[in-house]
Amino acid sequence: MQDQTAQIEWRDGRVPVSTQFDDPYFSLANGMAETRHVFLGGNDLPARFSDGFHVAELGFGTGLNFLVALQAFRECGCGGKLRFTSFEAFPMAMDDLHAALRAFEGLPDDLAQVAAFPAVLDGPDFELRVVIGDARETLPVWEGLADAWFLDGFSPAKNPELWSPELMLEVGTHTVTGGTAATYTAAGFVRRGLAEADFEVSRVQGFGRKRHMTRAVRT
Image (tube, rainbow, N blue to C red; front, side, top):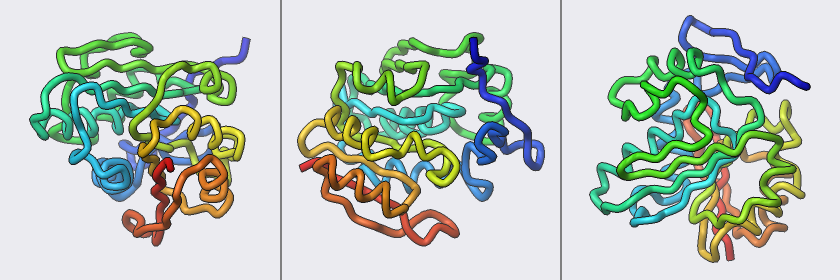
């Protein structure tokens, strides 16, 4: 059986880098700021949050996006629960995940005491589900619909399988009408894949040194 645990090395002692994909898990400049710009801003959050709002994600990674979204959900004061479903092929060892998150101050500590990888984790104001396995196999059989997507796989140049037109079509199929998607990449084939999946796609200002990113609305 193939080892599905993420293989990582540390850059500058604090930034985890996938040795499987030769790509860092978050921005070397400021991972939390990148998440807020790309995934919150790109999906018009927290303005759209409401009880039961459902975020879906390709690539759980360190859990940073989940915690940033949860923090924003709590601060918006809308009440109720945030639903968050992430698809992850190579879950991190929890010691590595905890070490990665220690690079950030002020995040919710809901993952800090979790000893085993949280395939299912329910809190007072959230429902987290992490679907382990290849998203090309697990997403088509998922029965959920997302209000917003965080498309956060490793670089399309290094992990093209997670950005294929076929997978973008599944993203569209599992998005409510008027739902959104956002990603840090502005690669042409990714934007075309989203357009073919009935998203209205736009290229907007990226984070940091990235000139552009992509946001999309399901028509």
